[in-house]
Image (cartoon, rainbow, N blue to C red; front, side, top):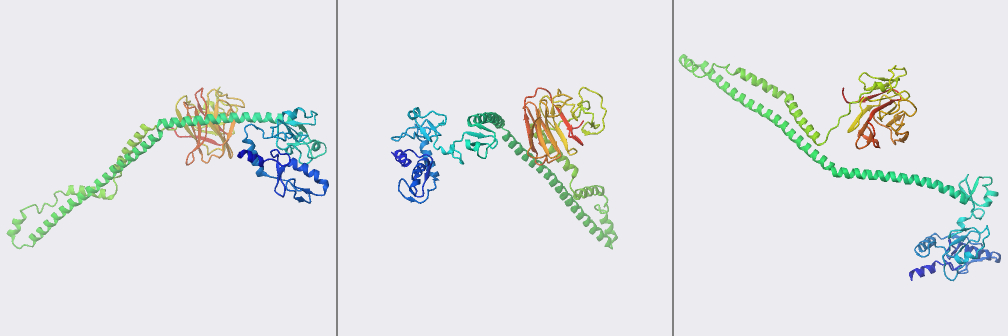
Length: 521
């Protein structure tokens, strides 16, 4: 019942059908745009205009304002009707609404199956899927049907626009032809977007799997337990050091008490001897001086001096050697415990292979620094030597495990670092690090940085802010990662792939020098 009442409110009083593009007069009544235009057209020669419903007079032809609220209500109502998919009804069926199957742009009507069979089939009668408003299919300037597409201005136009209007002489296409081309482009874009979405889904699944593995491995609990144990061990070490300091203070106190007692004993002897020296009776003096050890004042002097020197040393400051030994021993035990729980990895000892170095690369004696030179270095001819790109590989290769190496790039404004297969070509335009399928690189040129593999480049959003870069390889996890060693350390990019050969470190020097950090020969 409520739906029927709402439907009655949404019917145009002229055509008695659901509103099509409803517009409102100044009096507040609503009509289909087509219906009210036809009514106003018939009133044009009568000297005035009036509302078909309330008969309010208008001296001039009233302006038609689209009733947006009513349009929204109507569209929501029609979308809720299960058996009327298009929401467009036959214009000729006035007794009750019949869903339209086609709309004629020429006649500006919508037709059901019955009325479509008797409709004229001449070419000017263009039939399309049912639409609510024909006005949207007309040129806003010439009020004619939009039949063409101007490829120069990317606009749909009518015949008059093409023959006498502002699009005269432009390249145009029929709407169907232009639509077909547009759909082809859209399908290509759609395919790319679908592929990109699949890649993102794979990344999400990979990260989710990684998160599940980390959770299953209990890394958070292990780290929490490790730091709890570290705090306990450090507290124990602190107590040991403080006990040693307290013991030193206690020894000082005991020494002071012993010296005070001996000082009192000396004072007693001094008073007694002074009394003897003041006596006038020789017999008493001789008898008293034979008793005790009044004259034995040097006994224990050496021992007292040693204790005094030790006391001065204790008072002079902290027992650096003893405390240092305690700290070193305790901290070594703590580091050993940490290494048992979490392996602390050290940088790989990378050495450059002179046999691979381009003839414009000077390799230092310790094989850690590569410098670009304008002079030919006259390296011996070897099949491994790079001929076109000024780069060099490491002598070490990695075929398993986790490894990292670091480079100081502060001496060069143009450089590239990464990992390469030993089978990488040594001559040609595609032999640079990252310019082929056999290498992965991080490259900087001026203020721009990017990562590169198989000549595909990804520009990094920010520049490298420090002079040191870390390259991290996890062979089993199929990852090569790059880091900017600023504070805090910043991850730049990670390549993920399946490795089929051992990997060598690689360096390209566009100018200046690059130095490998860490490690020892």
